[in-house]
Image (cartoon, rainbow, N blue to C red; front, side, top):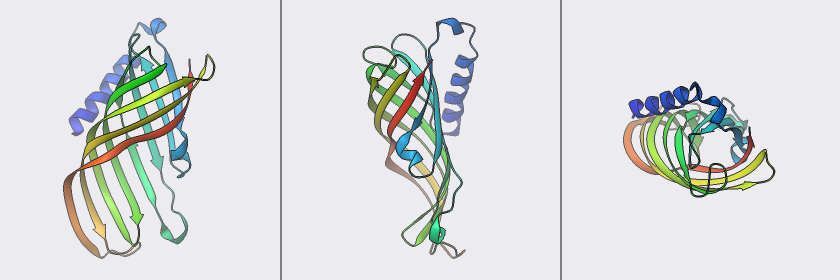
Length: 180
């Protein structure tokens, strides 16, 4: 899985450095609900042609909330989209890879580990103006998780180490996007 994620990242970097830059169309956006969880996030993207675009969302949350509640993570989810009309307009389907290092609390347990996976998504983009979009996206994927579960939020008492494949929603967003 790490090789797949690195391949996606390399593809995006190579495309951003391409010499045909005058024919490219770029965007930068943020997932608004993720901001509501104090997760700092941004997504850069570029069109490859009239119907295809590359995307690189990055999520980061270093914060600890009251009662030692955490949703800490560093997540990359590079992907590609096929637009049914044209890039950044109307409906799209996509595929993505995901890599995440996380540390969060749920109920009275603490989870710490990493996850890698692949997924598919569908979405829709509304043009607000020539430079602004709102995008909705939802997706599901298969994720390999390697984590340690602890009995309480602050203690070091391990409940166990786990490694498993899980189906999981891996895309859910309402994004405000600037086009340039």
